[in-house]
Amino acid sequence: MLAWFRRMRESEPVSHDGEAGVWHVFRHSDVERILADPGTFSSDFSSFMPAQEDVDRFIKGNLLRKDPPQHRKLRTLVSKAFTPGVVARLAPRIEAITDELLDAKAGAEEIELVSDLASPLPVTVIAELLGIPAEDRPMFGRWADSLVAPESQTSFIPNEERTKSMAIVMREMNAYCLEHIRGRRARPREDLVSELVAAEVDGQRLDDDEIIGFVGLLLLAGHITTTALLTNVVLCLDEYPEVAAALRADTAGLPGAMEEVLRFRTPLAPSMRRTTRDVRVGELTVPAGQIVLAWLASANRDERRFPAPDSFDIRRAPNPHLSLGHGIHFCLGAPLARLEVRIALEKMLGRWSEMSVGEGVEYHDARGIVGAKRLPLQLQWT
Ligand code: HEM
Image (tube, rainbow, N blue to C red):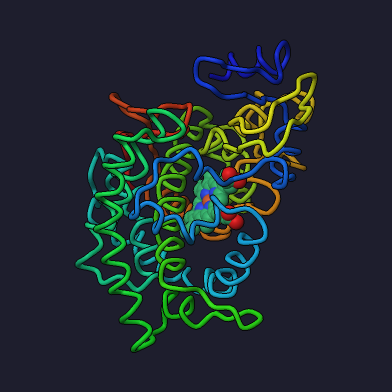
């Protein structure tokens, strides 16, 4: 993919793929501009999806797929509940969950990073945040896996068959969430769903379907991307052992290292938009009603924006990567993702004097998610 990106940035920075029915955009300046202009580049794809009651219900509160003004209403309301303070207060729990997961493997010479840590950590954190009982969490993880993973590997807009199979999972999840939300309406507790139920801006509140949609989005947006980032951190440290040694000696470099991993191995490779009018991008005019793939993973390697873009440099500053998006849809979970990955990494470096990637790594399809779905790791414990 990286070689293709480099070639396309140079020779065809905006390109029409008639067969796939999409337009590709590769340069940082064009990608950034697309993300900054929701009026022209819409996030609403409902016109492309076959109508399905369960899917419609599920996406009603999915702000990632909304344009202004609905987006502003939803984002303001959920931001009231999902504040940086709420996230910061999660730190002790994230530490405890990470410890529990690592304790379960104490002394093991080899672990499988994804199933042992990188996937259960974000799912458990989101489930706790939402107040989902511990015994229901495996089901929650299963929904996340079946709704996210296959989609990145097929087409960008799900076809009828895929929409049907997604609808089955969504129906189960909608019913579960509805019961959970009604429970919190009747008896609020200290969790995000109770906050969402109570959130009010200018007399407006979220209805049940909007909360269901937001819960679904948290589960989907907050799980696989964070898992991918954790695997990417480990893959980068394996490739650059001198960086791992430097971070072990001084963890002050961790935030810079995480940002560089986000740039270097961009977890969510493209962002997708729909044109609302004919629009000039680079040298070409993209007609109205077209799907545009704005390649974050290519923008992050653009030599016009980053000096030595193919060097992994944890001291890179500034680092204007687009891995968490840009503009009104900028990742709402960014502080949580950064916190989870920093804590996990501190614990891993603290417990393991050495880690090296073993045989049998399996990757996601890099056209969707950049990261490993299976990552055997050989360890020496301190
Ligand atoms: C939006 C990436 C973790 C919740 C986005 C977008 C990107 C992104 C690129 C914008 C997509 C677009 O404009 O089309 C990531 C990455 C993550 C991560 C790389 C991990 C490393 C999380 C977590 C949560 C989360 C942990 C919550 C628990 C959201 C939400 C939005 C979003 C709610 C939609 C915001 C809006 O539309 O206003 N994320 N994300 N993300 N992300 Fe994340």
